[in-house]
Length: 69
Image 1 (tube, rainbow, N blue to C red):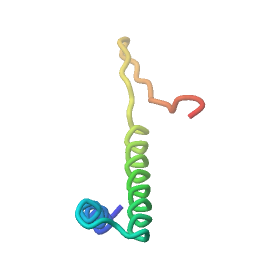
Image 2: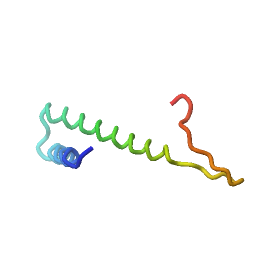
Image 3: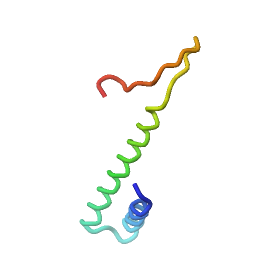
Image 4: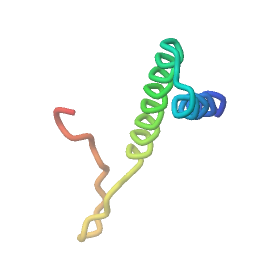
């Protein structure tokens, strides 16, 4: 997500606290927040894909997603 969209999220938040949002702005805010959440989740998932755990015996185990998720 680019900085322009993050700035817009912040603008809409500030406006919601002062004068309120129109229906269109509220929908835009919801869409931008959903996009932001997905960007955070994707970045976290990508980071976790590179995580390994060193066991007490010295062996290294790559972290795998939990079954069923």
